[in-house]
Length: 264
Image 1 (cartoon, rainbow, N blue to C red):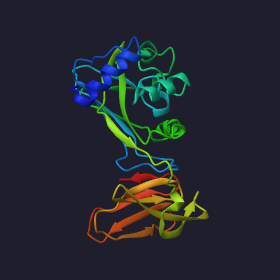
Image 2: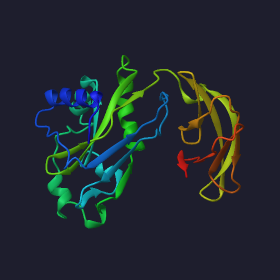
Image 3: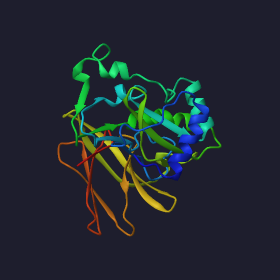
Image 4: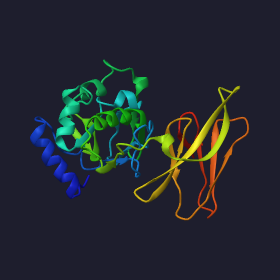
């Protein structure tokens, strides 16, 4: 894939600090896209939106590990800047050096059964939901009080020492704001495990001039509030699903309350 200036800078820095890194894409036709949360992350925000999508634009099949937890540090590698943060994470065994080559295990069945491998045909895509894995990285950043933002990209192993890089995103973090310090804009209950009722709050935070809604049931972000809009809330009867609508007729949002996962 084509790299922008920021991506190229990241590659040059990491080549210097992580020896043995092979930096080239598989035919230039496998692409990786990274989605991260655009708003500043709160100190206790447990689930932030992190999605990695692999697209096979080649004329041959490629193999990917199906599950995010399995793909992490085996096929899908997190790369951070500033470089001292990356080196710290590698040194603490929280992240793997991106030159780690496990392709032999991915390309054969001697490590993982075929039921955990997905074969992507030309034109197909595969998505990893990496929210929980990303949370571990936030702990590393919180330990360093001088860092309130950093850059992140994903690199994916698609062949023996063959890598594809995602776009590079800036992630911003709050060192002080906690979820329950926001304004309570809704209180309700939801049905948990089909029977029990649990109470929860929806909080509003303003970060960097933008309004965001957070679900206390899962310590997670719901959505950004459109400028000037007033949100309304409804727990769908007998479920754990919260529906948010807006006064300006912006698209509504539905979220699983205990897990904080958006529902299409």
